[in-house]
Amino acid sequence: MSIENLSCNKSFGGWHKQYSHNSNTLNCTMRFAIYLPPQVSKGDKVPALYWLSGLTCTDENFMQKAGAQRMAAELGMAIIAPDTSPRGDEVADDDGYDLGLGAGFYVNATQPPWNRHYQMYDYVLNELPALVESMFPVNDRRAIAGHSMGGHGALVLALRNPERYRSVSAFSPIGNPVNCPWGRKAFTAYLGKDTTVWADYDASLLMRQASRFVPALVDQGEADAFLTEQLKPETLEDAASHSGYPLELNRREGFDHGYYFIASFIEQHLRFHAGHLAC
Amino acid sequence: MSIENLSCNKSFGGWHKQYSHNSNTLNCTMRFAIYLPPQVSKGDKVPALYWLSGLTCTDENFMQKAGAQRMAAELGMAIIAPDTSPRGDEVADDDGYDLGLGAGFYVNATQPPWNRHYQMYDYVLNELPALVESMFPVNDRRAIAGHSMGGHGALVLALRNPERYRSVSAFSPIGNPVNCPWGRKAFTAYLGKDTTVWADYDASLLMRQASRFVPALVDQGEADAFLTEQLKPETLEDAASHSGYPLELNRREGFDHGYYFIASFIEQHLRFHAGHLAC
Image 1 (tube, rainbow over the protein chains, first blue to last red):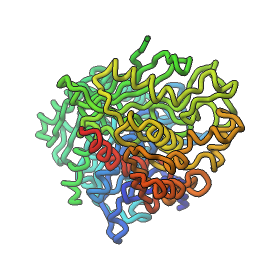
Image 2 (cartoon, chains in turn yellow, red):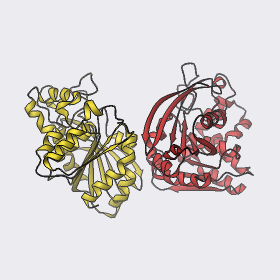
Image 3 (cartoon, rainbow over the protein chains, first blue to last red):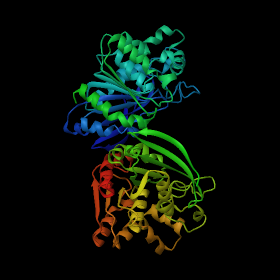
Image 4 (cartoon, one colour):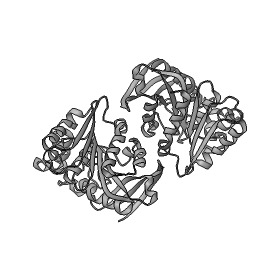
């Protein structure tokens, strides 16, 4: 397995690094970023938060804009940020910002031409943590979080794999993708027209029938322009009520969909995860 | 005076806003950003930190990447981030990233074609604070700070106008521009070949002869690729020793020239300014 270091910046006493590697799962070269807190210099392995970004993002948006490294350094937590889709000239794309490159939706595509590379669900669930845990001083105590499309991804991965994650959180997640324009467009392309298979990637449908729980924290801005049509946090709340799911969902007055919102509450999310990761 | 609101994001209980306005000083339309902390909602006027960015930046880099708004909200401090040069199709430019657009160097240009628009010194010193203090709940207790080219600008503005600023700080400033490639290129273009007039824009030369003091804090990464050739913090230290200037200059092992370095120490800079602004 080849892996190449692309950048290295000291940050809050730890290190922010970018790497590229050949992904067998995605059948292309991928970039990811990792923040290693200062505690690793003592030789300790640290728990890890996997962060999934939203539409159009790369590994860089969260690392540069969320202000998360301050708390990760204090708590002794690594953060791993993958890209949001397979990449490369040979990877299928679409003219829309919400399908194709930058819009992998954290599913395993079954439909051509997407199925050749768009296997982000398996990549985030298996290949990336295996790589990280073999290459870095990071242990297998994992949390997962994300924003918007990445919030959807984080919730789905945790709901379907409760043995893999200690906690999950999301900002402004696409809570019920089978019933919103972003989700319907992406799922039709990646998964096909048979909507019964879409349910495996819908956080509200999964949460409604859940019997094994990963503690979940969601923050949603009330001034978010996508709130009503795309995000639908009320469907998550209904699902949690139905199954007794341990979901804390906070509505934040005046906050929008962007990174100033994430930065404002990232400390609370990292402290939530640290409690479950036993940092 | 026309001013237009371009964006508004709630952030840490306060508001990040971008505006455009017609600048009489720069003879063009300018954009700036302001962070208003939650304390203004009580009707209080708050002190202000003016932040000057480095080469190629706009008002956005610091606001998005420095993580400063958390502390500004806690301390009750506004932050104002101007652009780094005049802007517009009619504004003179150069092929280099270090001259022209994005590289105003916070001087008043005297040489054509630059002198028609490149008057960033006067803009930051007079026009922008007058606008801000007339339009927003911001008082005239001012601090100034910046990064790289902006660190040079902040130091020069404070050294030449001690009655205008309570404190000054800089990350990785160009400390002796008359003796480095960035400074010599810019000053030759904007100020002409007579190097005697350059001294008015050189922090080390100004600090060496200073008799009125603005408390100054500088942080410099020791892994900064520009340290030896462009930044020269040792000349600032020599100047401060000579005049007894109240300069605290910290060298930070392992940190480079980028925003992860700024984010790592911005809390200390804001606390330093808050002490002098009596936030």
